[in-house]
Image 1 (spheres, rainbow, N blue to C red):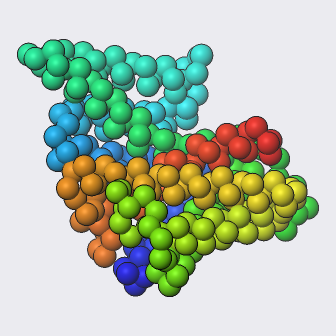
Image 2 (spheres, rainbow, N blue to C red; image 1 turned 120 degrees about the vertical axis):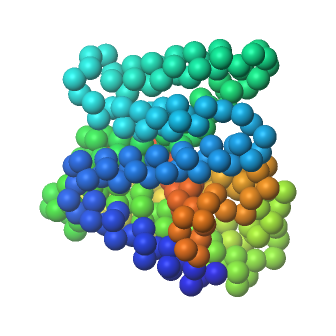
Length: 276
C-alpha cells in the first residue's frame, strides 16, 4: 500500500538526505551499512531457496566490493585487489565442504550474493566520476559529488512511485507475471515516462542537454525495474514475500534498495561515457 511505502520512506529518506547534504564519508557510511544489511538479507533468501553459502564471508566480501575503491593506500586499484582477495578466501572456505559439488555450489553462491549486493557501491562511485556540473546552473551548487547521486535517487524514486500509482490505477496487462504477479505493462510505461521527465529536468538543471537527461532517466528507470524484478525472482525462489521484517510496513532493506543495485551501475557508466 502507498501508506506503507510512505512509512518506509520516512525511515530511509532522512539518513540519505543528510548524507547527501554532508557528503564525503557520510555517503560511504550509508552505502556501507545498507550493503551489510542487504547482504545479510540476500544470504537469508539464498539459504531459504536451498543454496548453501558462507554468509559471513559473503557479507564481508559484499562490503569490500561496494567500498573497496575508497581505500586509497593500495596501488593498482584497491577495489579489485581487495575483492580478489575476498574471492580467494571464499574459495578456500568452500574447500572445507566434503562433497565437491557442494563446495562449488557454496563458492558460486557466496560469490554471487556478494557481487549482487556489492553493486550498491556504484552509488558512492557515482560521486567520484569527475563528471562536470555547471556551477552557474540551477543546481550547480550541489557539486559533482552530490549532484549525480541525487539525480540517481530521484529518478529511481520517480520510477518506483509512478509505476506503482499508474499500475494500480490503469494496470491491465501483466508484465513478467511469472516473477511478479502485480507488475503491469501500464505501470512500467508510467514509471519510464516519469523517470524520463525527472531525468531530463535534473540533468538540464545541472547545465547539460535535456536529451541527455531524458536518456539518462530512461536507462536508469529501466535498470531500476530490472533490479526490482531480480530481487522478486530471488524472493520467489525462496518462497518469501519480503527479504526480512526489518522495516515496518515494507519488509527488509533489500526490498528498498533492490532498484538501486542495477540502476546505480547503469547511471555510473552513462555518466562516465556520455556526461563526463
